[in-house]
Length: 381
Image 1 (cartoon, rainbow, N blue to C red):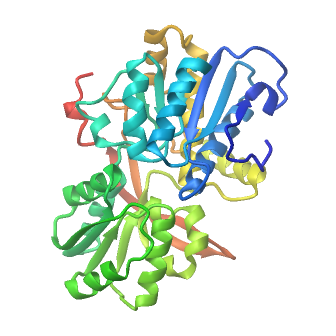
Image 2: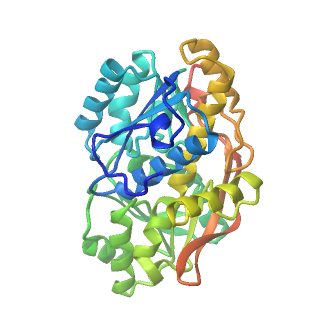
């Protein structure tokens, strides 16, 4: 695969991008993801993981159209409409951000198309807003934060200061942490989405009397916060989800992240054959270690391919059943969906370490085992 694919309104066909020939694709996939601006690294990793799985499958019956949403809901909606109405895609995927997901997914499923989420899992789509054609292959937004709350209990923390951006995933994050954390809150803040100066928030943390800090600040927001937090001299322990301590972010944060415990349903040292092969092949293809997002893109593609092997996407009932069966080898090991088409899975505590010159994570322990989201009981499926 060309490693220099740019964030353009590009069309990527499995048949041409990988030299499979010119056979007409039978399943057409539209990938709308963030490939430019803030958070582009997340979308690039999802894209690269997804396309690696397509390449490894060696098949010529899948066409993938890729577009950059620029992290803007209105752009994402325009692209989705174009893909459904003009490109005639069968399946949509790729969105990173929950506010974009909320703008695109309900319209997509209402038009009879399937949506496979490799990342965003807003609570509104997991409970009463669930839909038979919507599958989340990553997690429901609250899950990794719930695991962080469970870890904080085991670490003996009693008084946490918590903060996250003011958008759907940020609200789900703090809700999830509070659902499992048994201590008190020293403070609770919602920051501006895209914020990069956290001096005021760090001052509040310093004065709060907290014995721990939980934060969800993905992409560049997390980089900015962690660097400023270290420079401030505040030495209150930090706990967070993988989104602020993932492979691409860690290299930018550096020593400020060392020793921080974070939670994830995936890590490069999960011991199964699929994961080992994925880590090795991703690194060989792209000359970098895979991230959480890359693993999710890879799993999403392999779920799709497993369903295509069982059913024609034009037969919605059969294809839906094939997706629900999740008959594929996941990087996480065993994979299954709950009744609301979100994963039921193990979530781990990880520690940031340095291996040679590379900052990365190692597994510490299980934070939550065989865990389902709290909204599934509200889903009528």
